[in-house]
Image (cartoon, rainbow, N blue to C red; front, side, top):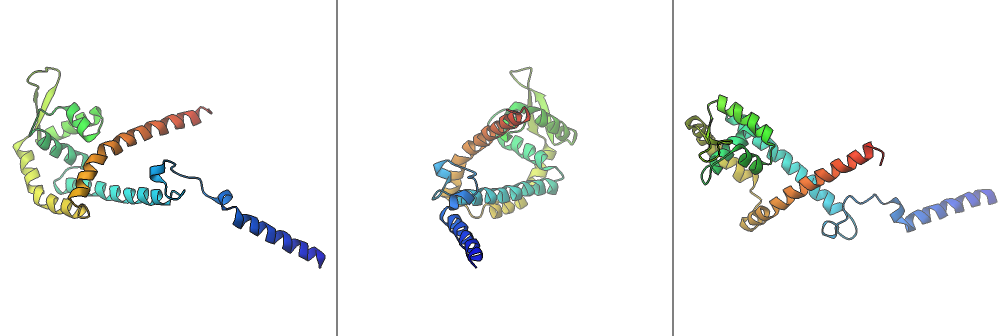
Length: 200
């Protein structure tokens, strides 16, 4: 009997220690900046990230779908419509397009080449810089974008139905910083991966 009581007492003591010291069993924080933490926990941050991942997956699927609707890949659609929009106010070069879409110059050059072969984009010598070319949308490309526009407008209105004017303006302000943060985070992750690979 005393032996059984000692086991029971020990078990009870262990349970009490676990209940009194929850920090020992707590999961590590996935973010530590005060702006991202609520009441010492990262639950809200995790919910935010997972919601953002869900939305970006749907955003990418929408882009692919709009491209497919007009017979293009998602990136080709983005490049074509970006040339059309950017050329309203300035000359459009490969470097301009790459910066606008956050693509590499090599990727943009390859995709523009495919759009040129399709007869949707034209390349002409830059008026002042012989090393560059100016990009423009051909009449066939304009027709393709115009045919897409009614469906595109309905899809975009539906996709962003949750945003009011103030929300939209706030997102426009936040996006450049979020993109820059993404670039910095990827650079940091690459650095840490290299350190791990070299056993540092």
